[in-house]
Length: 150
Image (cartoon, rainbow, N blue to C red):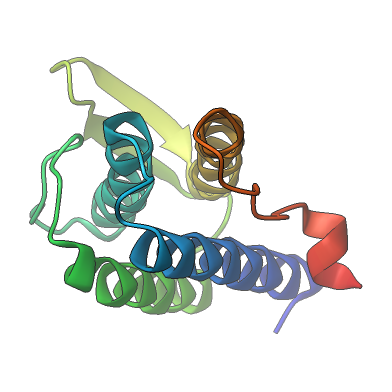
């Protein structure tokens, strides 16, 4: 395993661990979780799935803003991690992927850039969820990468 592959593997483990922490809070406080947070967490999981499929040339199972049953979120996240790990082992990072985004526009990006985007996109929306938690009386989950590394 190359250093780059090991680093991305660790980033996806971090990503999944933080998603799992959020899913636990969602299950513990269903009455306090806003529709916005539900929408954002589902979007994080769906987008990860969609990007995996773009890289791996698979059909999408979910829409970008589809909302799932709360009981399905854990498994969706773990399947995303498994697929990302497969992609990490099977793809060349500098390889380019042609895809069509959710708006129907065609693009080309490297696997490396797509993988980083998945992590960055997830972090962005977890930040939105943290702010929404605070506004709804829930202590935000610490999802910082450095805290994961500690």
